[in-house]
Length: 335
Image 1 (spheres, rainbow, N blue to C red):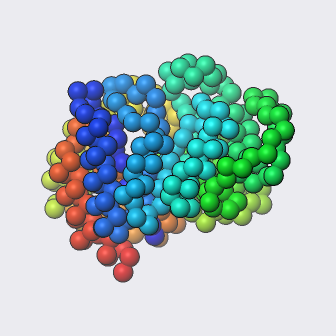
Image 2: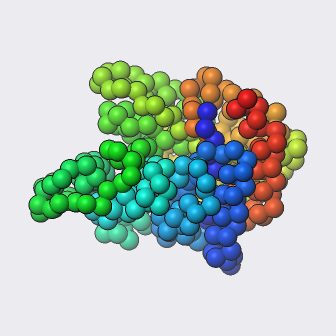
């Protein structure tokens, strides 16, 4: 079992982005010393009502504090970008991390982002497929020439290559069953999102595994699982302290239409108690240990990635959570 921290980089517009970056670096040092295995963050553009740093420069800064931890971009919205640029950026990040970079990919869902980049959302799956095909060629082949529907490249000799061979691990984010089957057919680990309930995730893991078997793919080694988490001395305190920040964050998600991408008619526009039930990991160290063991034993997850900060949550409360994880959770799981 590996533990990861998803750095909560979104802030209110009246807060300091420079200070948030320094706070994140402090969190990375604390996670490193607590025995975490991975740091990561995701990507959004024009993310009102929140400000957010650009993903790869931010992760490059965090890598300087990461020690031996893996560093993941989880995820990059690949259809919005040129694959040559992404391929060389990923190779550079892998060099910065000395071969410890993980490349998470997603297709995106926000109309504002597609409009801003001049990309049709209906093209996103095809663009992702072509981008991954071209990027892997750029990382591995001595000579590359590419003619696709969306991307063309004249004959070139790529030389900017990642440290890891043949390339860094690729994780695919997916919310609905169609996307999960696609990740399985392509042979990549499914990066399990934090938004669906545990009962939905259990069903979707079966969907993923069934598709793996159907197409004869080898099951990926990694099963990374992303959860919202808040740990305190007792469950009542954890619920009280996390509620205003998680409520606000998921109200923003609802305004973005994130829940429309989920299966089984799940909605974020419900009372907090219903939203949190079977979805968020909130409680005492004992509660957290019990839930992690359930993810490991019942679902087969071998990466558990926690997000424990949302816009407005004070730095001191994040660091206190990391202390509790270091003292009372991680040693019991990794014993």
